[in-house]
Image (cartoon, rainbow, N blue to C red; front, top):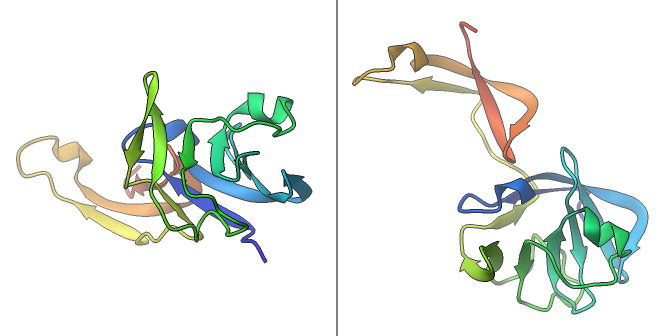
Length: 149
């Protein structure tokens, strides 16, 4: 059974592809599960080449009958879900792709409920206690809000 939710982390580039992806019930791409970015227009799909790929709205317009996007895993998945494929992901950087070992596809994002920020050398207004803003994401990552507003 494929996971209902996946999280894409891409800290070094193509952050627009990052975030929470929900399994699209009843739809497949090239015979494999399909996930849609919850707060965006990107898709995590199996390309016709048998690789997991993350691409934008133009992918949907092609009915996923393609193999291109902004992120991809070079390993042929053979039916293995994207969070379990062994191998690094590649991201578009300018006109070419670069291997990026920091790209992660996971089934959960671990984060603390509260944070304490200390600013000993200035910007004291940013220091203090922060609490997790449940359900909020920015650039595919969790958001914490300063307790005093």
